[in-house]
Image 1 (cartoon, rainbow, N blue to C red):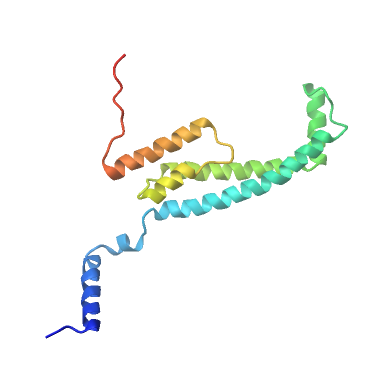
Image 2 (image 1 turned 60 degrees about the vertical axis):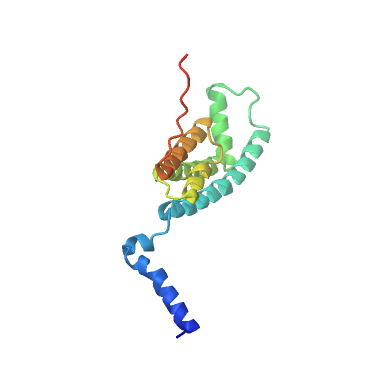
Length: 166
């Protein structure tokens, strides 16, 4: 007796589905790195806002620096008062506050990304790529260490290099 094609397909589907049925529903419902995927989406939105607020700020900076009222001697209290007044005049103060708030939001997301364990290469990629617009070298070092910790945890390998004693 031969099995019909539709029956074979049904048996194959049942064979594939059987092991899945024994896995808890939560594990099946959550894709790998679900939290890092959510954070990555937030990071991209925060970086978009950061860049969008930077462009008009730079234009206001250029306009302010070209203003003939800006003193050539750029120190002292007199300069600070004129700088603040011109900053208001050209709209730079409000733009700087928006840009600064956007940068703070990016830094907050980056901190959460670094603290969230990665479950796959996607998560490790998020951790390595989540950097604010103008990161410090320390930020890169921290991101790399965070990703290496995840790689070691996921693979069971330690990447410690035994350096010879001096």
